[in-house]
Image (cartoon, rainbow, N blue to C red; front, side, top):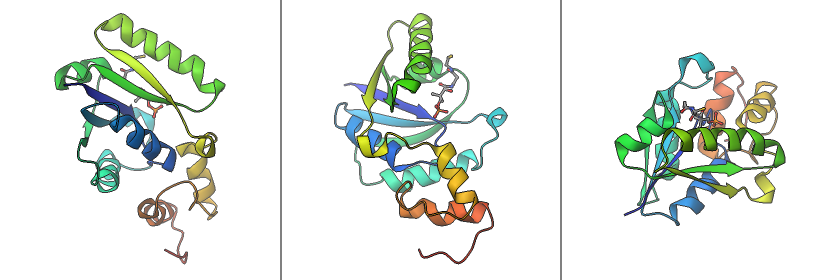
Length: 164
Ligand code: PNS
Protein backbone atom coordinates (compact mmCIF):
# COMPACT_ATOMS: atom_id res chain seq x y z
CA UNK A 1 0.00 0.00 0.00
CA UNK A 2 1.48 3.35 -1.08
CA UNK A 3 0.96 6.20 1.32
CA UNK A 4 1.94 9.76 0.40
CA UNK A 5 2.09 13.07 2.18
CA UNK A 6 1.32 16.40 0.56
CA UNK A 7 2.88 18.91 2.96
CA UNK A 8 2.47 22.65 3.02
CA UNK A 9 1.50 25.75 4.90
CA UNK A 10 -1.93 26.03 3.21
CA UNK A 11 -2.43 29.55 4.59
CA UNK A 12 -5.04 29.37 3.12
CA UNK A 13 -5.67 26.43 0.81
CA UNK A 14 -6.09 27.56 -2.83
CA UNK A 15 -7.68 25.98 -5.87
CA UNK A 16 -4.15 25.12 -6.99
CA UNK A 17 -3.58 23.07 -3.82
CA UNK A 18 -6.92 21.31 -4.27
CA UNK A 19 -6.01 20.41 -7.83
CA UNK A 20 -2.75 18.80 -6.64
CA UNK A 21 -4.65 16.96 -3.88
CA UNK A 22 -7.19 15.60 -6.33
CA UNK A 23 -4.64 14.49 -8.91
CA UNK A 24 -2.12 13.00 -6.49
CA UNK A 25 -4.84 11.15 -4.57
CA UNK A 26 -5.45 9.16 -7.77
CA UNK A 27 -1.82 8.02 -7.87
CA UNK A 28 -1.57 6.56 -4.38
CA UNK A 29 -3.60 4.40 -2.03
CA UNK A 30 -3.64 6.95 0.75
CA UNK A 31 -2.83 10.66 0.79
CA UNK A 32 -2.25 12.64 3.95
CA UNK A 33 -2.38 16.42 3.59
CA UNK A 34 0.14 17.60 6.18
CA UNK A 35 -0.34 21.14 7.47
CA UNK A 36 2.83 22.64 8.86
CA UNK A 37 2.34 23.91 12.39
CA UNK A 38 5.06 26.51 12.48
CA UNK A 39 4.49 29.46 14.79
CA UNK A 40 7.62 31.19 13.44
CA UNK A 41 5.99 31.49 10.01
CA UNK A 42 3.40 34.02 11.19
CA UNK A 43 0.43 32.36 9.56
CA UNK A 44 -2.82 34.26 8.99
CA UNK A 45 -4.92 31.21 9.86
CA UNK A 46 -4.24 29.06 12.89
CA UNK A 47 -3.20 25.50 12.19
CA UNK A 48 -6.59 24.40 13.52
CA UNK A 49 -8.40 26.67 11.03
CA UNK A 50 -6.22 25.47 8.14
CA UNK A 51 -6.77 21.81 9.00
CA UNK A 52 -10.53 22.34 9.32
CA UNK A 53 -10.80 24.11 5.96
CA UNK A 54 -8.85 21.33 4.27
CA UNK A 55 -10.94 18.65 5.97
CA UNK A 56 -14.14 20.28 4.70
CA UNK A 57 -12.79 20.62 1.19
CA UNK A 58 -11.41 17.11 0.88
CA UNK A 59 -14.19 15.20 2.65
CA UNK A 60 -15.38 13.75 -0.67
CA UNK A 61 -12.03 12.05 -1.36
CA UNK A 62 -12.19 8.63 0.30
CA UNK A 63 -8.41 8.16 0.50
CA UNK A 64 -7.47 11.66 1.70
CA UNK A 65 -6.96 12.66 5.32
CA UNK A 66 -5.70 15.91 6.83
CA UNK A 67 -3.38 16.30 9.78
CA UNK A 68 -1.08 18.90 11.33
CA UNK A 69 2.60 18.26 11.80
CA UNK A 70 5.61 20.00 13.22
CA UNK A 71 9.29 19.28 13.16
CA UNK A 72 11.01 17.68 10.21
CA UNK A 73 8.82 16.53 7.36
CA UNK A 74 10.74 13.29 6.83
CA UNK A 75 10.34 12.39 10.52
CA UNK A 76 6.61 12.92 10.27
CA UNK A 77 6.43 10.97 6.98
CA UNK A 78 8.24 8.07 8.62
CA UNK A 79 5.98 8.20 11.67
CA UNK A 80 2.84 7.85 9.56
CA UNK A 81 4.36 5.35 7.11
CA UNK A 82 4.38 7.66 4.08
CA UNK A 83 7.04 6.85 1.48
CA UNK A 84 6.20 9.60 -1.00
CA UNK A 85 6.24 13.37 -0.60
CA UNK A 86 4.09 15.22 -3.12
CA UNK A 87 4.86 18.80 -4.12
CA UNK A 88 3.36 21.02 -6.79
CA UNK A 89 5.60 22.84 -9.25
CA UNK A 90 4.13 26.02 -10.67
CA UNK A 91 6.95 27.56 -12.63
CA UNK A 92 10.68 27.46 -13.04
CA UNK A 93 10.97 29.86 -10.10
CA UNK A 94 9.73 27.10 -7.77
CA UNK A 95 12.24 24.63 -9.06
CA UNK A 96 15.43 25.65 -7.29
CA UNK A 97 13.83 25.80 -3.85
CA UNK A 98 11.91 22.57 -4.36
CA UNK A 99 14.99 20.76 -5.65
CA UNK A 100 16.93 21.85 -2.57
CA UNK A 101 14.23 20.64 -0.18
CA UNK A 102 13.72 17.36 -2.05
CA UNK A 103 17.44 16.61 -2.10
CA UNK A 104 17.84 17.51 1.57
CA UNK A 105 14.91 15.30 2.51
CA UNK A 106 16.33 12.45 0.44
CA UNK A 107 19.69 12.88 2.09
CA UNK A 108 18.07 12.59 5.52
CA UNK A 109 15.97 9.58 4.57
CA UNK A 110 16.70 7.74 1.33
CA UNK A 111 13.55 5.65 1.61
CA UNK A 112 11.29 8.63 1.06
CA UNK A 113 10.93 9.95 -2.48
CA UNK A 114 9.58 13.33 -3.58
CA UNK A 115 7.37 13.50 -6.64
CA UNK A 116 6.35 16.73 -8.35
CA UNK A 117 3.10 17.45 -10.07
CA UNK A 118 3.15 20.38 -12.45
CA UNK A 119 0.22 22.60 -11.63
CA UNK A 120 -2.50 23.12 -14.19
CA UNK A 121 -1.80 26.18 -16.33
CA UNK A 122 -4.78 28.07 -14.95
CA UNK A 123 -3.26 27.90 -11.45
CA UNK A 124 0.38 28.40 -12.44
CA UNK A 125 0.47 31.96 -11.09
CA UNK A 126 -1.43 31.23 -7.89
CA UNK A 127 0.01 31.45 -4.38
CA UNK A 128 -1.49 31.82 -0.91
CA UNK A 129 0.61 34.96 -0.42
CA UNK A 130 -0.83 36.69 -3.49
CA UNK A 131 -4.36 35.61 -2.61
CA UNK A 132 -3.95 37.19 0.84
CA UNK A 133 -2.64 40.39 -0.72
CA UNK A 134 -5.67 40.66 -3.05
CA UNK A 135 -8.10 39.77 -0.22
CA UNK A 136 -6.58 42.35 2.12
CA UNK A 137 -7.65 45.07 -0.34
CA UNK A 138 -11.11 43.56 -0.78
CA UNK A 139 -10.34 42.31 -4.30
CA UNK A 140 -12.17 39.44 -6.00
CA UNK A 141 -10.59 36.15 -4.94
CA UNK A 142 -13.27 33.82 -6.25
CA UNK A 143 -11.01 32.51 -9.03
CA UNK A 144 -8.27 31.64 -6.55
CA UNK A 145 -9.84 29.98 -3.52
CA UNK A 146 -12.91 27.80 -3.02
CA UNK A 147 -16.16 29.36 -1.85
CA UNK A 148 -15.73 28.04 1.69
CA UNK A 149 -12.48 29.98 2.10
CA UNK A 150 -13.62 33.34 0.70
CA UNK A 151 -15.67 34.53 3.70
CA UNK A 152 -13.08 33.38 6.21
CA UNK A 153 -10.32 35.16 4.35
CA UNK A 154 -12.18 38.48 4.09
CA UNK A 155 -13.16 38.15 7.77
CA UNK A 156 -9.47 38.05 8.69
CA UNK A 157 -9.09 41.47 7.10
CA UNK A 158 -12.33 42.83 8.55
CA UNK A 159 -13.90 43.11 5.09
CA UNK A 160 -17.67 42.79 4.94
CA UNK A 161 -20.42 43.07 2.37
CA UNK A 162 -19.29 40.71 -0.35
CA UNK A 163 -21.46 38.17 -2.18
CA UNK A 164 -21.11 34.65 -0.85
O1 PNS B 1 3.55 25.48 1.46
P1 PNS B 1 5.00 25.68 1.79
O2 PNS B 1 5.15 26.77 2.83
O3 PNS B 1 5.83 25.92 0.56
O4 PNS B 1 5.50 24.30 2.45
C1 PNS B 1 6.83 24.15 2.91
C2 PNS B 1 7.01 22.83 3.70
C3 PNS B 1 5.95 22.70 4.77
C4 PNS B 1 6.90 21.68 2.76
C5 PNS B 1 8.44 22.87 4.30
O5 PNS B 1 8.65 24.10 4.91
C6 PNS B 1 8.67 21.76 5.34
O6 PNS B 1 8.68 20.60 5.00
N1 PNS B 1 8.85 22.16 6.61
C7 PNS B 1 9.10 21.26 7.71
C8 PNS B 1 10.57 21.30 8.13
C9 PNS B 1 11.39 20.49 7.15
O7 PNS B 1 11.36 19.28 7.17
N2 PNS B 1 12.09 21.17 6.20
C10 PNS B 1 12.73 20.49 5.08
C11 PNS B 1 14.19 20.29 5.26
S1 PNS B 1 14.99 21.69 4.53
